[in-house]
View 1 (tube, rainbow, N blue to C red):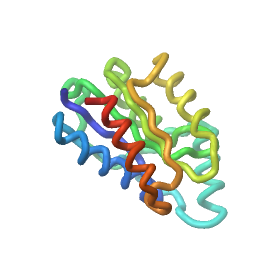
View 2 (cartoon, one colour):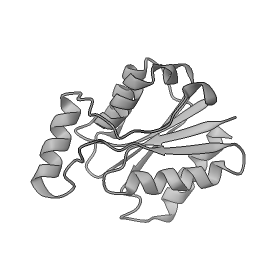
View 3 (cartoon, rainbow, N blue to C red):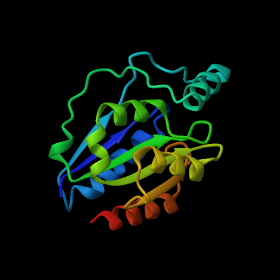
View 4 (cartoon, one colour):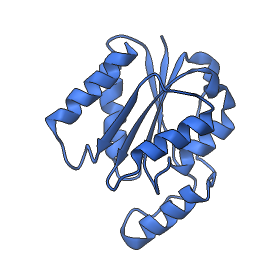
Amino acid sequence: MKTAIVYYSLEGNTKYTADKIADLLKESCEVDVLRLEPEQSYPDKGFKKFFWGGKSAVMAETPALKPYQFDATQYDRIIFGTPVWASTFTPPIRTFIDDNPAVKEKQIAVFTCFSGGGADKALAKLRKFLEVDAFVAELILVDPKVKVKEEDDALIAEFCGKLK
């Protein structure tokens, strides 16, 4: 089964998790990883980070993304990775889905990384946006790169186990 991991990462937690998932899944299937990057970067420090990121998420903005290569017909499964901003998924993920509506027809799994809360709400909003009742697998982690914990590795392995 060919899998695409499509993610956005501001502070590196989501990238860290995407890389771990890719490494584990490569043992059982073909995996491509796509990091989404907005044309205009979000602030990553201080008040501006929370204001602009939160506003963009709440307003369901769709920022322009830097060019990328992706063909949904090449994949059986899509794994989305997103930080949680204002209890929702990030705008670059929204843009990607808008630009690639065929992903809604694939098996979908999701992982989130967050610091403050709202991951369950973010997953519910993403399910609604993708028009699916459930994801094949879900994973919620609290700052996995910043606060490395053995239990996170076990959660990532369990998530990947559901995908094998």
